[in-house]
Amino acid sequence: MKPRVLIFEDSEILRSTLESILIGLGFEVFTFSDPGMCPLCALGDSICPLNHACSDIIISDVNMPTKSGLEFIKERLDNGCKSKCRALMSANWSDTDLQKAQEFGCRIFHKPFNLVELLDWLKDCGKRIESERELSDWFASPKQQQRKLG
View 1: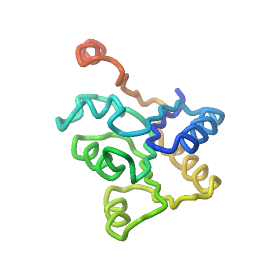
View 2: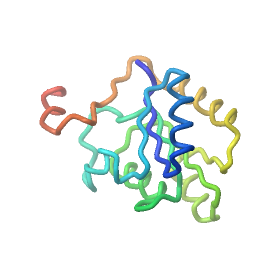
View 3: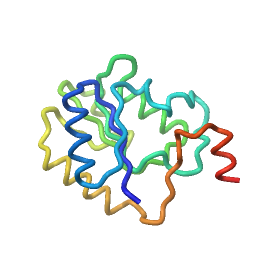
């Protein structure tokens, strides 16, 4: 099973570039220009109903149109997110945002970031991903989720 990466980035150029590179390296990639476009946000503020991680890796820009990457990561963590590798990237880090990102266990990237540094981090993440893990089908409806899990 390919490692699954979610990318949240409002810059279409950066988002599509990262997607192309990661797909070329064998990752399963889902990209969103804003966290509000992701099916995970439809879960609202309830505990994550998924029994398995939605993804192995989450990479998010901090400053986005409707919800910051920090807000998104905090919501997911508060709701039981099981993704083991999380990274946040920004060209304009404030001290407060850096501190929050570290508290959330996120890898921090400063834009423009060194692609080799990102790829090294992804390689490290790959070493921590269990080959026998199961990833949730978060495009399925809650009823379909229950049938698969029950």
